[in-house]
Amino acid sequence: MMRNSEYSILIICEGEKTELLFFNSIRDRIIDKTYDVGDIKITIRPEPEVEDEKEESSGEIEHRAYKGRKRTTKDPKKKIKGIPPLKWVIEGKNELSEGVFNEVWAVFDKDQHPRCKEAFEEADKAIDGKKVQIAFSSICFEYYILMHFTRIYYSFNKSECRERDANGKDLYYDCGKNTHSKDCHGERCINGFARKHGFWEESKGDTSMFGLVEDKLYKGFVNSEWLRHTSDINESEHPVYERNPYITLDSIIKRLTGDRNKWSYLSAGSPVIIDGAFSIEIKPDMQIQIASISTRTVLVPANSFEIITDSFSKQKGDKILLRDTTPHLIDCSDWEYLEESLIVFTYNSNKVVFTLIE
Image (cartoon, rainbow, N blue to C red; front, side, top):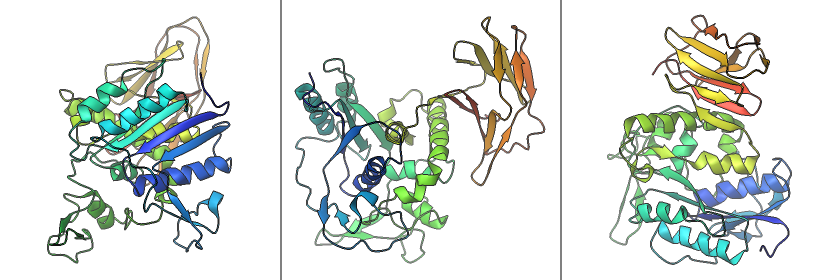
């Protein structure tokens, strides 16, 4: 039985800077009622200290629930002991068993951690009917950020290229700036790729990256669906925690920003059933087939299809009325469809992502 009447969510983060600042920004917007997620209390662990310092202008959206105060991630109050990432899942299970939180998430990367398999297996074991939910990214959190800027499937090695000096201090190459002889130019590290393409300069600083992607969350959701589908094709023989790239971080972002849509990916030859009323299927020659599978009359509104690329989006599709089981074919040959395009079909609270070019 829960001890608190207020619905509570615990987010346990691996990182002590990038992830914390990101989720703190979302929490601030929930406090401001920017996102419609109901009356919930969010606890983030480790919890950043709050310094009484004036927030400096950075071009990012400031933390509105803490105006005039600067959040820092130095010296978090509580260290979770154990072997990563298993220790974060165990911590979450302990909290669920104590009945302090209604919902627990563990946010972590692959990042050479030795106990990923055990972490996923442990998270799948229920405590009083509840499980620790994993928000995962490989190889690092920044790959999810990258999904808001471009559709890319690439096995990066790390977030930043660096080495350590004799004193154990990290020396960064600032890849993408052409200032270091070991600059990988975005071939090995994600931040180098981001700098090279002008997406962002720094991900490890004291400024939240949420302001960079807040107006691109929808695109991030779409690209994340595509990335998992591509991973299933390329690395189906490997469990998700051994794949690179792979992300499920969009699941917690949807949860915290109030996206209640049912997202799925439409593969060629595998129809998706919508609300038990009709199916949508990809046919040859750039055609989409919609067919009723019930006795219900279905009206698919105009502009139910959205073509999305890195640089633009546009809506397509005429109104469709399904009265019987006769399939309705949609000819997409004049949709100005590009190789890098993704299509999102929307019906009620269903979002179906697909491409016409596999």
